[in-house]
Image 1 (cartoon, helix red, strand yellow):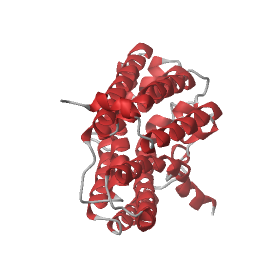
Image 2: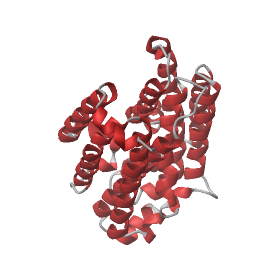
Image 3: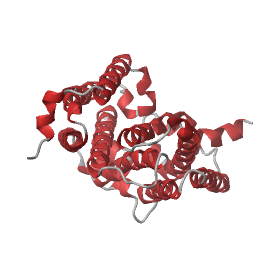
Length: 307
């Protein structure tokens, strides 16, 4: 039983909370597409959530196996089951195949486009982890290739509602760059925790080309791009949402402050729910966003007027 638990752990079911990133995609679909009954979409959304969770766990499984030789240089990851030798390759292969099949099966029950998005998410796991590509070892490409999973999750949420339309590219890019900000901030937090460039480079080869300054500047750049693309979406589809921009900027700043903490939650996003100030801020942002979606503010219409 303990051996089975080791295999369950490398699938990281505690990270399934990240799949909540699909829900903004469903919200945007409900907002932009007419004649959609939310009650009819409960099961597809649930299946899309499960499909994404299974595919993400499949990616985590090969991630832990292939990273074992590098994780031994990390202060906390060196205690993982794969590093200690408790996990066997044949077990990893069986687990990876099973999780992949479960993910694809759930996705096919939702829609063809949902399946294609899950396939894309699965392929990104290979590109990110497996040689010769293994983009996690290439500076900046590591952040962008991992954070594109954020955009894929948005698309999964969208296509769980409709296959007839595609979401605006502006919000997809904004979501991607928001994820890149989170990932660059995670890299920065890991880098300062390890506090030794040589050890950091042994853990992750991309760290050989990073510095604290370059990581912070890149995170700032991704945050600016995210706000820009989100602003384009807001102006085109709902001018009232422009009032959200200062709050979104504040959210990025608050997350930055978390990254500077010792043993920061930014290194483990699945633990962010313990950051009470962040959760309260997100709740306030969600409430205000809902109000801006349902309440018209006529004097803001000039922002979107192109005539």
